Image 1: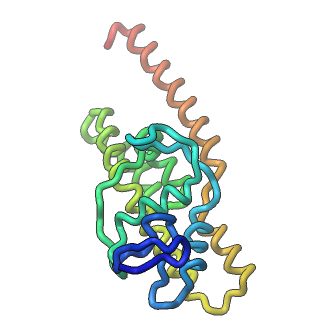
Image 2: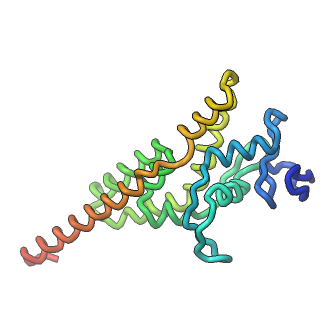
Image 3: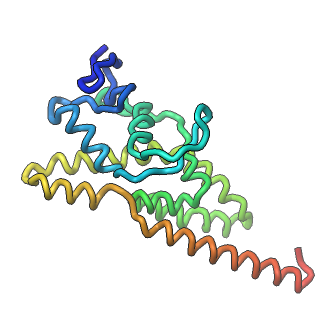
Length: 207
């Protein structure tokens, strides 16, 4: 067991973050624990999010605290392991929009094209539910690796001064606020298309 420098509570020897306060433990003494957790928090960003748990129900709280607690389930010393978690936002909202919101562009592209191609080739529009379940069960783990990989890239840039590092953290991390308005616009468009399709079906005597 090892003690956290922040809250002085005991944690397993292989923990990357304190299980009690979320402070990160230094990896190979490259960063102090306080600086390490500051980097993770700065990358995730100070925005709040609508969160859900079976213990406390729905809540409006800091996203960085929530993610640091969730990331504990994936850390195993210097390595990582997959653990089944659930991400309600990635499931209930369009997964494409959530990944885009968190700047995970490759997965945003996958979830933009994948459900459309699946529905086209299968002829079943409900196949999108399968994609939402996949996103809900894997979004936390994907986001964990997204943050971890980008922070590793930032650490390797030794010549950065403080302002340049902070600017890079903002550019690579945080969220894309415009995605919220994009989501509203796309859902309004979808509603219009659905209403149009229903009206055409009724006029033609179809289902």
